[in-house]
Every structure is written in C-alpha cells, then in structure tokens.
Length: 333
Image (tube, rainbow, N blue to C red; front, side):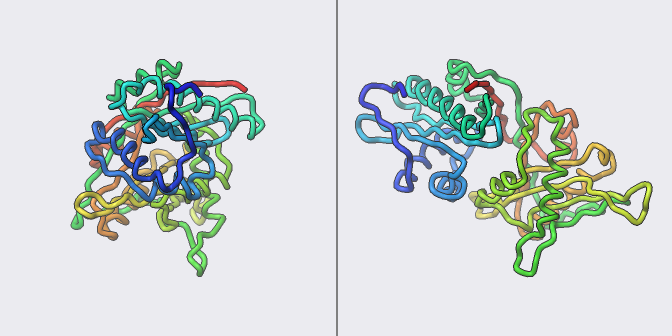
C-alpha cells in the first residue's frame, strides 16, 4: 500500500473507537447537518457480527494518530461496498485516499477469489455535495452512476392511518413462542424482495442466509419490524397471494431523545402493483412508529427508479434531507 513516508496501517480494534467516531462524524456533518454517529453500529462494524463480512484498515500518521479508515464490505456475490473516511485537515489527505482506494480494490479482488468468481463490482456512496470525495473517486477511476434521495417523514402522535384498500392484507411475520420468527415467513419476505428488485438498478441476488444475517447485524434490527403484504387471488377469493414486504429498523434517538424508524427495504411484486400494497406497507410502518412513540420514519430511494417511488413518498409527506450518489468501478481477478 502506497502511503506517505512514515505512515503505517493496522486493523482497527475497540480501543480505536473514539478516533473512528470522529472520522465518521467529520465525514457526515457538513452534508447531513448533524454529527451524531451511532456508536453501537460502529462497534459492530469493528468487533461484532457486522465485522464478519468486512475487511478494514486504519492509516496512522508518524505521530501515532489515526487519520483514515477504509472498509470493504462483501455485500453480495460480485458486489463490494467500499467506504473511506479521511481526516481532511492533513496536507496528505489526497495521497492517503489514493493509497487506500487502491487497497480497497485489492480487497474486492480477494473477496471475489474467495467466492470463486472472476470479477467484482465496487460501489461507493459519497454525498452528492462532497466535491473532495468525488475527486478522490474520479482519480481512482470510479464513475458516477446514480443519485439517491435520503428522505424522512415526521410522525405525529394524533395522526390517523388510513385503512387498507379492499383485497389487501398486511401483517408482521409470525413468531414462535420463544419470540423467534417463523422461517417460512422470512423466506417469503426474501422471495418477494428479490422478485420486486430484480429489474432495479444495481440489484444483486443475495442468498437467503446472507440476507437474514446481514440485516441482523444492524443494532437497530427487530424481528417485529418485518411486514408481509398479501392480495386476494382474483381467480380464487378464498386464497391470498404474497404481494410485497417491508423490513425496517430502529433509528437511534435524536437530539430530543426520541427514536425513529428506518425503512431498510420495501418491495411490491410487479403483478401486485397498483393495488395499494406499497401505501399499505408504508402506512403500517407509520402506524407502528406512532404506537411506539417515535417521531420520524426515514428511507432511501433511487431518484431514477422506474417505479416512481420518490413521487409516492413525496405524496405521503416524505421530504429529502440530503442526497448521495453511487460511484462504481468493475475489477477482474
């Protein structure tokens, strides 16, 4: 790895948590308007279940200070998410970034070898207004491919959630007596999401075990935040068909001390679109947030989605807080 003279690297551990929190906060504050960082999430990335599918390294300056943090996440077969946080107050920031992006590329190749595939697709997600990170990505031969809207909707304790459209049923996944979810319901969630996203931008098929494990890595994961939607079978009124699903998580408390809900995934099968399923799922998660005393529901949407999802969210009260981009690079083994 090419770094400035006197610099070293190491795998981060929990003793490095304060430095990692500072790097993450400095990266997001100018663009999200808040420097609040989920310490539990970062702890999981460094030394918890979420670290299992990640390769990461920190860059240390000659004085022993951690100045950068690079993470390669083996997201799915052939897809590697890459993250880079660099202290921009140092004169060598661009040089450090170049060395670490080269290291991230090497990690993606190594992950492809372990999976027995010949190529990998690197995916970085800088803030749209982050001209510095975008310059580093362009220098590393990444290409800007897509724009993502990060939206939120306030939740009011006295608002009423509309009733479901006729022929639509929505419920949370069933659980056993010990609180664990019924496997068949989780498999139905996975199947409906895979089917609904198969024609979407940057969609990679993910095995069921990988899907469940990755979502469970999130500190905000809750089994009672998984919903299934069904529609009546037009050929048999006594039969219902899986039509869509939604998986959400808990957002950490904000400055006012109130938690929120984050929509990780929402998908509706193509043969069920136009029947009020998406609105029903969104109203279900809003109603749940109200019952739990939360004050917001947040999500991310492809600005160029062929389903026009951003228009639906806007019509239901969501507004854009900030914008990110997808920058891609394909590498071969």
